[in-house]
Image (cartoon, rainbow, N blue to C red; front, side):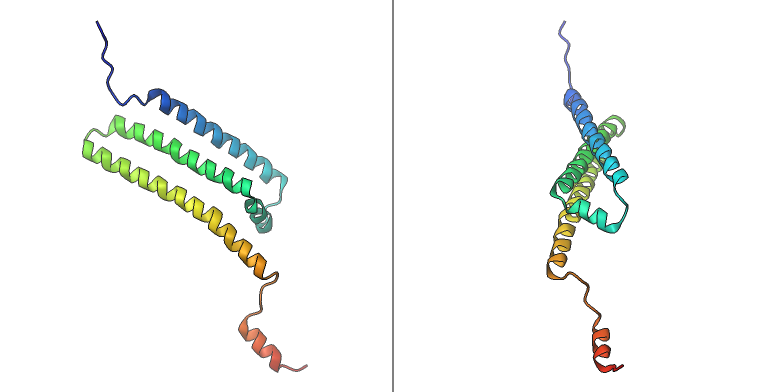
Length: 142
């Protein structure tokens, strides 16, 4: 008698994806713990850390791994417990869109913020005085 196996056949691929993404997130967590324990918690040290390309790439890899890990887990839960097809599909699409927004937001934070800080550092080394201070300082005589 032949046994007929039906289903999506996600088993091994999803199991492996969960383990690989978990390993990536664990390595990132250890690296962040070492970096944070060896540095001070100031705005400038945090900014300098994320100004380095390797840190932005590592953080993006962490965010993408987290999104993939979450997708596999949520998809499996939805397939197991939500029986109406329409509702399950709606929830899956909503989950995918939300995870895509989170990864896109991470990219925006990592690279737009870095380019903005690099541009501000390039054009000025010190903050400019407010216009009212420049105006009144030219009129006041000591």
